[in-house]
Image 1 (tube, rainbow, N blue to C red):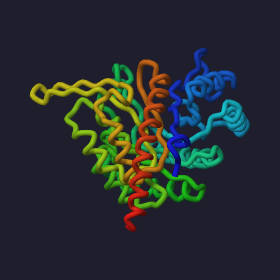
Image 2: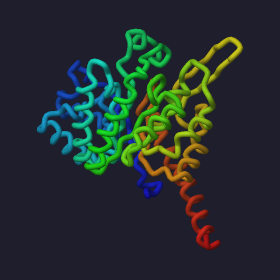
Image 3: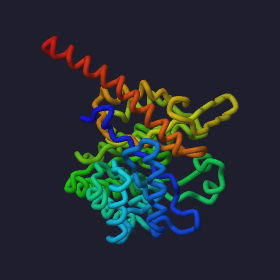
Image 4: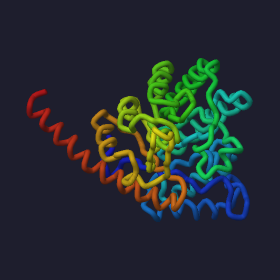
Length: 319
């Protein structure tokens, strides 16, 4: 069990896949990587999640991967987890390719000392999503129910590989996929039924949608018992059911509609012990992420004291 000081809180590397000069980040000079990693370290992060929309770790040549490892050591950053974005293993055109990519990512994640590989079933953005102010305001991909069993089988396959390498797979919640609601996520998780597979309770992906939505607390209640990794973010949300009007916008964890002080404390009481990844869209995403990491650590400190106190009382009472 981590302490509040050692709990892995990773920065999502949201610099994008293209360097300032137009070079793909994966082949950019090492100095570009170093500048971006230094920005993260300077704000107090000790862990990152090199999600594949930054540097696709699985696609690096052996030499570039060694350079990446050496650079992490130089800057003083570790890898808590690696998230795979819009690369569904049941994509009708690229499913097998994506499956192979995730297998390669599992091996690279183990080499980097990560504990989690995060996967989901979201697919590429539509043209409408690419041109929207926020991509979630436009309709995106919907999973095909006919491919559900194949999805279950391929996640089990990934779970086997992760378990062999001492890692776990986390299933990211995302609208209109097999993990599109808390009920869907728990149902899919139970069908996979693998000891190395858990849920990423990314309720932020749902609370931002301009559609009717249950309360965040009621959604978290259903999925937190199965969580092993947490993409954590918050939004303002307002709604007027009478006119079917909705509003949402990204904000720091402290300021949104989700009460994360309460939710994180509940998660710890339920036994949550996985990493966090701070995620924010728009504005100074890195600065907000650093503020969010400080907030999470402060909440962890208070919750840890409560759990320790309850443990002492339990021992004293002979329970």
